[in-house]
Length: 281
Image 1 (tube, rainbow, N blue to C red):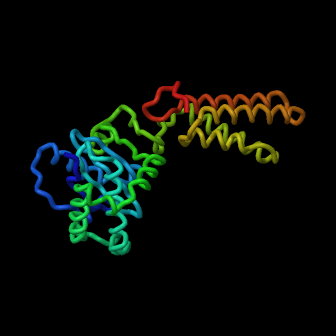
Image 2: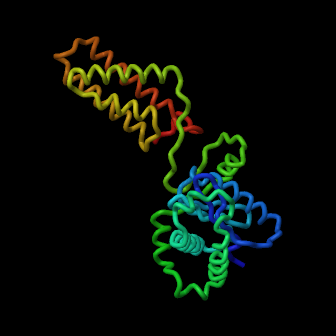
Image 3: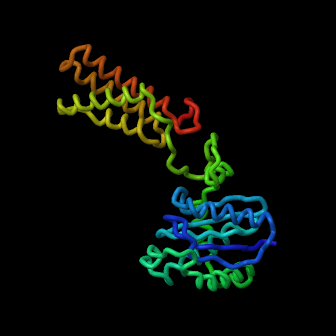
């Protein structure tokens, strides 16, 4: 039978539980899933604002908005659109009921435990689909989920939350969150310094410097199609130096082109954590 089993409201900044539904389920797998939910609640600020985690025969779904997270456990066969309609309804009611200042100043767990009454009533409605036909607009939520599907958290994400070392990259479905790049090595530092130097020299001449700035940015931060962008920046460096052929001697041009090529190589080599050097983004 598909149904909502548990729901809670937490503060995103520190994971402080604000309210939760009371239940007496003693099933072992459900208790384990609820432990996963508690672990997630302490790390909501590290994830997108709408996610799903599969945990055995159950799903954990959560959304976050305005510093408050709304989480729920349901059976794996519970419709995704109903799950997020349920969370959306909790969110709207909680925002209307409680002042943001009171939420941010709360220091005790379950300071808004009286909200459990609304959670229980809403849970009963969502566990009886016939009562929902005139209460919610499924079409709107279906469209929203289709346009912006929830991120599918992987077991690796859960292991990382629970304190285990993970060496494989997380596999999010949909638009990936910001990725971390590999640590900077000595050649990377040298190439970055030389690129900044070239950019400064070009800026003093009142000519192109944007290519060097773009290369430094691509080296320091993850960006979609960063390899392609780095090759484009290098091509602009070459074209700009061809344009300045009469103002610079051959050694100056070779220096700028060589630094640009070296920086492009370092961008290519410095990939997101867990990716091989041939990973093209």
